[in-house]
Amino acid sequence: MARFVHVSITLVLLLINGITGFADKRPNVLFLFSDDQRPDTIAALGNPVIKTPNLDELANRGFVFSNAYCMGSTMGAVCNPSRHMTLSGMSLYRYDPKKKEGTWGDVFRKAGYVTYHESKRGNTAREYHKAFEYSSYLNDGKERTSGHHGRTAANNAVEFLKNTWDRKKPLFMYVGFAGPHDQRVAADEWMELYDRSEIPLPPNFKPFHPIDNGWMTGRDEKLAPWPRTEENTRKQLHDYYGCISSIDHNIGRIVSTFKELDEYDNTIVIFSADHGLAMGSHGLFGKQNLYEHSMRSPMIFAGPGIKKDRSDALMHLFDIFPTACDLAGLESPKSIDGCSVGPVIRGETNKHRDTVFLSYEKGQRAVRQGDWKLYRFPLVNHSMLFNLADDPNELENLADHPQHSDRVERMMELLAEQQKTWNDKQPLTADNPRPANIDVSYFSDPNNAVKSRRKKPNKKKG
Image (cartoon, rainbow, N blue to C red; front, side, top):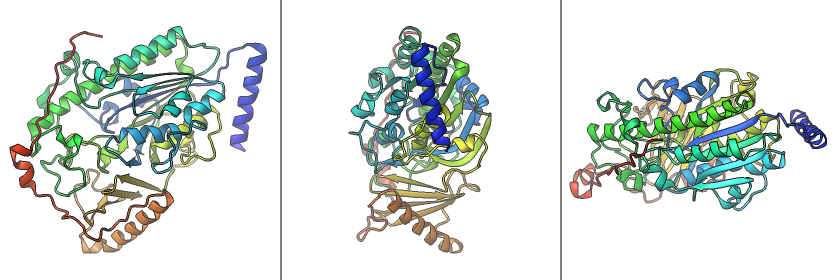
């Protein structure tokens, strides 16, 4: 019934607006999507060091989800399937990059919205991209080495808002930033916001990751030498925080433009990231792992009708699209895997998904239910069990404790069930497994360590 009412209201508004020429005052939707941003990198959400005043304002007036997950990836570029899942509302093994119908841009465009999309080239399927009325790609490398992460995307968004948008129609604007993904080059004005010596290491920092996760020598893990050192990790965090502060500044420019146009009070603002990043946690630097720091994303909804609150409800990023539909009064496609968290936002329930399933290539699987998380490495037949309430940093593996053997068995069964639910064919046990433990002496050899580099930024201010 609720969906029918949403559709009826939409059709009536479209007919009235078409006949009378009056402005369509359905809410605008502004979706801001960063790249590689950990869930703990917003000051208002508990990080005492990072400088994010504009995201703080959003978080302090909006509804925050603490457990929003990217489902994972079938490739090293985790951002690729993550953005495809987000735009399609489909899960990891079901999204179709050749299908434009029923994607986020398509649904809002057909509902009478002006639709705008700008994001990274290569991480948005052409058909998904073409679903938007106005669309363009960022030059990722140029943006990341300019010293001003987010500036180009904000420049283009502000220009569009002021000079192109026909404000008689509501707007769906998708702005996908190219950072704080490496190359993490931040100009002095952003770096000077921080005293590097005061930037704390992640609480789960380690010099090595002792288990072979199938990606120990992948691209992102070559951004720092082995063993990971406190000095190098703190330097990379300094660059990372500087880039995030630059993005925050440019988010503020976009939001300010909505305010200048007197549209902000009628705009639903959604902020998230395609996934997190290790940045020294567990001895890793990339996002090619299923720890909380890499698969969780910051998740904020703010705007008309959205109360200030927080929730621990479990959700996937492909739930954002149907949630945007729900909040805007549109019907989302019945065929998608995502489902709206609107009932949680409205206080109708405090739960969303009972279980979260996570997957990375062939070598990693995980499942979370309640406070319990099982992390499985199928190629080496190794399991880790964490209680996230007691151990949010995933430091104590309970899988080998005799008192938890029954829980490990039940969680393995749950993981297998989730694989069937989401079309994952990977066996959870290898007949001829590789050794699970890593020979750390290999990484201690300086001939095998790859030193990280930081390019000098363009000094132009802006």
